[in-house]
Image (cartoon, rainbow, N blue to C red):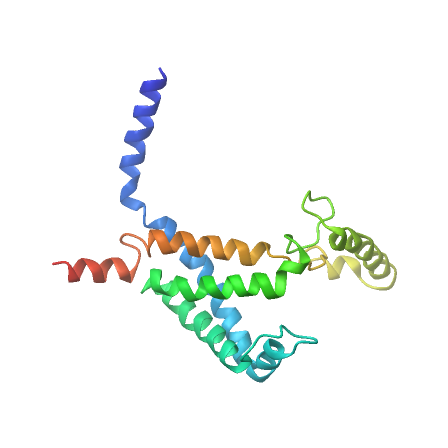
Length: 198
């Protein structure tokens, strides 16, 4: 019985491999706007980005801030556009992985894992637990002095913890794309390599 079930699953799986390019496509479509927006935001206020990258007191304290900011903007804008197209996917994943590793280490690491403060999470640290009281106080103030229903009609109030959760998730997706490529039938990489091999 188990052998037949395994054989059935293997037949079903083999039949679905024709659309295996959908998985990398979905990852690319998820990541592309994230990087395009991040790069665009940095580009729009480039001088502030350079200052933030370089300042050791209130910024990241990175060496060569102009160069580092330029590399970050270029990798996010160009990388996001190329991910969208599925062009040079494996190659473009490298600078984006580096960007995510630097972001995780310099910006997010000190805040723990959680991106959004959730005191009920088993990953909550002291910073997240302290945020719970602040969030309750904000709700009370807004309920008493503001139109709380209108303020929350677009979603719940949250406190950004700024942990490594998103940077780590993007890094893992980029690692997967590095090994999977842009996707069979769903990327320019596939079609260009098909033409070149004929």
